[in-house]
Image 1 (cartoon, rainbow, N blue to C red):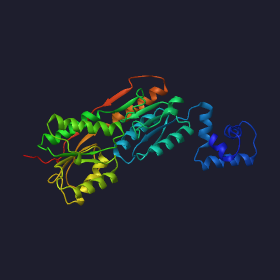
Image 2 (image 1 turned 120 degrees about the vertical axis):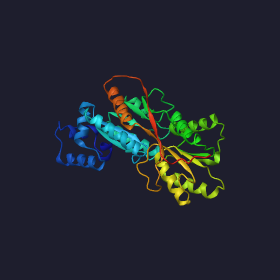
Image 3 (image 1 turned 120 degrees about the horizontal axis):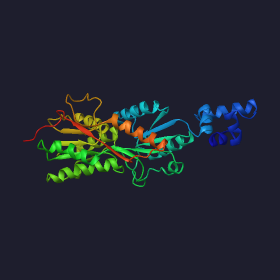
Image 4 (image 1 turned 180 degrees about the vertical axis):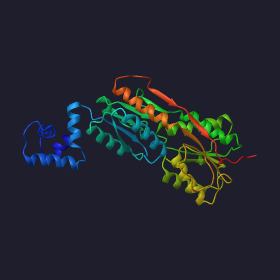
Length: 331
């Protein structure tokens, strides 16, 4: 409402009168206010209702990349659960941009959002102080925030699962193993790298920093980094662990462009299932997360907070490894 008042040059009291229709205002003023709501992409009836009840019946999910099948499936389950509880879901994508994340949070607060599920861009820099001040329920999705240790969290065991995924390659005889990491300023990116390193250490395999490809959880970034390193390096790893499915797509494109074949020239395993793989006629060995359980757990966490029911703040969901034929056996 303050935004509309600033935009129109009217007082917040006048804007409130137009919204609530409880005091006479001129037709010109009414039109000015309603036009401002349209320009600012606000829904006047929804805002008026939320002002009266202090509830908007809107819940938001903020994710890094809404095109990632992992997030799409989670959002679908959250929406399904919340709709039955009388809430509508707003889905937002940060594209791994901290600046965009902050703009999204401001926008949602202006819409009087009831609750937010978020996969933060940065485990140290993401700022949720204003949400907490307003007592807006928050649940973290798969990424922790180091400065907000008490926030409810639903995720997977990134360390253990990347350890297990790396072990799939080791048990097939691979010792020259590289990794495509996500953004290392996120808990997810860091924990997966640590799980990878731990698996190598336990099997007395040295970690080669030259074979670390920082894909930042972005397909295009992964492609560019892989192309650059594959063109410059005389020796390449016999196998790669990719820390998410979006980066795997970029890696496969780079591998194909270098006239390499999976698994004959390079083996690969991925964290998260691939929606499709049109580049190679192989099924990629993948660690698949239970997105149905994840979505339901996140939605339940938000509803419990809205209804003042407080349950354990940390929920870790199980994942399974689906074996394909993307690993060559080294003898």
